Length: 264
Ligand code: NAD
Image (cartoon, rainbow, N blue to C red; front, side, top):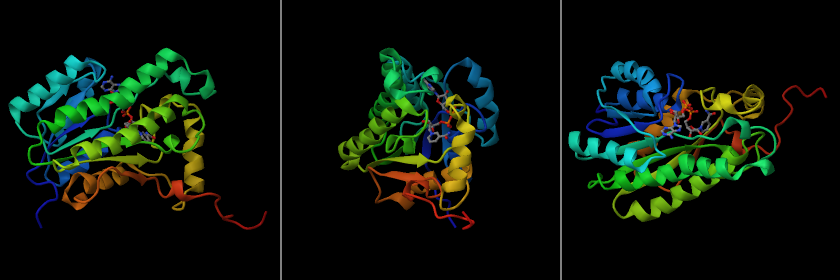
């Protein structure tokens, strides 16, 4: 059978190491024949991204700090030069000062609020605008969000507010670009132990809670997210846009879990 991503070229942003959600998506896309360019933040991460990119035969590894417009312009100028066109983009980037990912949301500081919104929300819009200009035949744009956008989760705080804005921006971008055949979606992933997640207070407890209370009684893996991303990035998702698709073992549908061992 032809591979799902055969002939498709895409940019994957946000690989920090082999635990990154972006890397799970990259592996799934490469397995299905996609050609992938990676962007990374800063020299320190380059050494981690290079061997991973090599594993899937990718040679375009480009530095980009999404808080810097000139850096974003340089990234897309490079892609324009080597590829000319793009079929998909994955934005798996978020950041907030970890001192604000614990305690009370109400204590959030103005400066970190603005930085969190800039890196975790606006950057996706800035990426989509530049990517769309390279998608004359249509394309698929994907970002990563979390249930803390919809409901209060411990310690998620300002990042929950940012993810709510990110999900709203996905809907607006879907409308803006839909007539050009460009789709825009988010995956709301259940908790996964990554570098970014380790900044969140009590993360081990959050993982355990999700494992015990999700309908599937387990946590999601990088592979689970990779496979769902493949659906949204490939032609399988051809009629889907503006969507926040939950890949969380069903956690978001549970109001109250049934007692597993009914002896209390
Ligand atoms: P990760 O630490 O592997 O990835 C986060 C990435 O963001 C890193 O590669 C980092 O370099 C990048 N980044 C931060 N600031 C940047 C900047 N200014 N410019 C460029 N890149 C920048 O962690 P992850 O968990 O794979 O996170 C990926 C996405 O998934 C994030 O949006 C995160 O909020 C989201 N998400 C994570 C979980 C989870 O439990 N891990 C759950 C749902 C959603």
